[in-house]
Image (cartoon, rainbow, N blue to C red; front, top):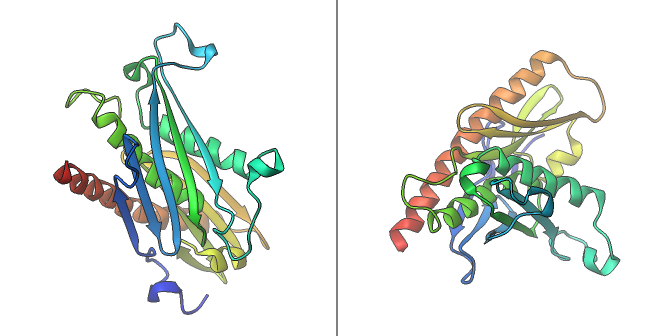
Length: 242
């Protein structure tokens, strides 16, 4: 891979920006941009839980993910028009929900459901990882107004990033062209405690070595540490505005 987008080196992320309070009627919303990928994340809190959780004194977090028809270079039909979600959509929204549930104490949340909407406005690779990173900011904002200071059930940050291997070189934060050409691509989800939530990795053309995998995870961890800082900075900016 040569001439990476945004004139970056192999170990650099694309430019990242999180705009908080993007939606007027949402208690927590964030527009995250990672290069040319843009995802609008919004959190809604409801005072109920799924039937199978009622009476257990615990909450739930779930997510919905979707791509706007013109988010890619060719228009795609809305899944609502087709009458069903694709397997990819279902897998991604389950990943977002799992990732956020690992960052929160469900007992402290109480019998509430938090719904996270992640709408891809523009896609250029890494939409699932951007969704997780932006969704955590929206979640933190929504909980800030619900719980007194110091009592939030949110105990960790969670963020995600992609990393890939091409011609035995490791690259951080792949855009679409890089992802489609990579020999190996990984998506890594991590808490700020350093614990891994999920690692999704696939060899597209040839097997890879354990040492290469460890090096990819190490580089992704560095990128996620930078995302934690950006998340915190976006929340500080938001609090200064309110």
